Amino acid sequence: MAQPKKRISGELDVYASICSHSEEMLSATKEGNWEQVIIIEEKRRSLIDQARKLSKKTNLNERARARKIDLIQKILSVDTETKTWVQARMKMLETGFKTGGEILKAYGSGVVS
Image (cartoon, rainbow, N blue to C red):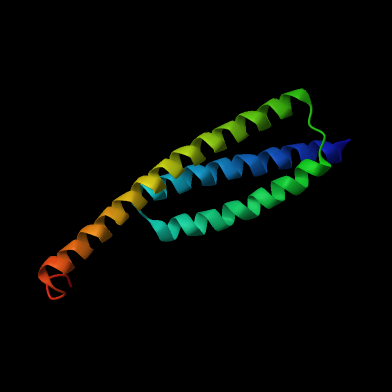
């Protein structure tokens, strides 16, 4: 019985780490630190793969299952906010590129360096 208990806490620890990485990714996104976003996402992806494998092997009790659900809901909420920030930044970049193109058309390539 000691092994399943260890696996249960291990699975929840992995979900907690995913949640923590998701929050870090949101912060990096808000700061526009795209290199950090990529690094965190790679770590997070590995943890998600690990969580999937653990979930197949683990039978959670009701309390642990409730904690897992809470963590997943928080992860999804943070991911939604991150997506909103990314989309806003992409829109801003798109607008900037369009404006830059319009300046080039109007004034020539010597204006934008």
